Image (cartoon, rainbow over all chains, first blue to last red; front, side, top):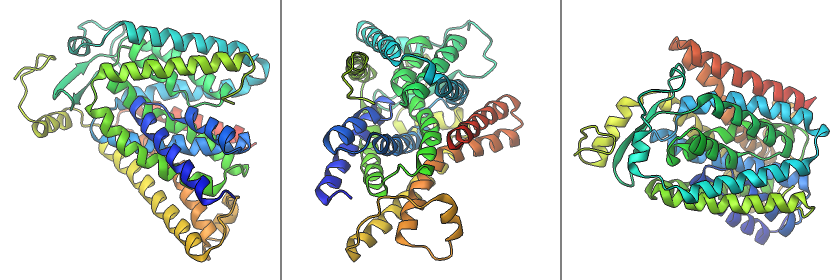
Length: 286
Length: 133
């Protein structure tokens, strides 16, 4: 069992992971796993199990705030959860037949592409509202159109979700990769919703935060049943992460969407670099 | 005041919140309460267990208590058991959210989303079955 100073350090890092995760719509496992394996020298499977409960804490902590404030597009989240959970199952099943290096390169490339898009095109207020385009590509059978209140500029934005079919397919691929690589996949879900489906950045972040909890919960339960969860490490991670989400959600609500996009783009570049390193055999991420 | 969305809107954040709450009245309230209750219950149990271990000077266990053992031993709960139940509550909260959503949409006679959430729930159970097997 780890000593008190180790637990305190873990709680501190978890706080930062929860803050970043709730601000960006990701789980924060990308920060937790390297800290656990490289700094605390925890076994990889225990590290992943600990990170998974951290992802759930980020999701529940952040999503409760965003759902309460009506930032989350619940219908969109639930519809895409079909794609991500199906993809995750298939991904886990075919994992043994694929060369992970190809996937890491592919996702490294996709991350850098999405980052470039986010840096190049600014999201204006007009953009966010104009997404209420009059003619949707497919009838809005799933009633995905929604609106949200941005407390930062005190404006209501009504938007329509574009390209639902393409977004669904991309989410299935994202779910497949999270099943293959064992990651939550928030870094894929946010760009899919924002760049491809033209959901405003804040709504994409909030909706992704809701979705990541579900897939992480199924995996976490399996790790729990197999005895890989260390209760002390898990408890400190959860408490730290939840504290971080209190700060992170407030920060996100008050930040201009373009700032969030820039931070997200930097985050994607980091992911892209880690994926590329992993493809060439330098494993910071499992 | 006219927003970028072109709608005439009341001033003030509180008034805007009422507009958005009235417009986007979905299952937000139920999901919010589910996530909050699950998270808070987890935090209370974790803190209670950690406080016990700190006060008694005993080491925090490095293994969780198995689910079958937990169910059998519910009548004589140990601090280790409370710690494990806290972790399980957190893990089960997102799944409970999906299950409760199915019930909500069935009650609302929203066939499309009752089916959508049911498929998600089915996928979760398949994933669990595959993972445990």
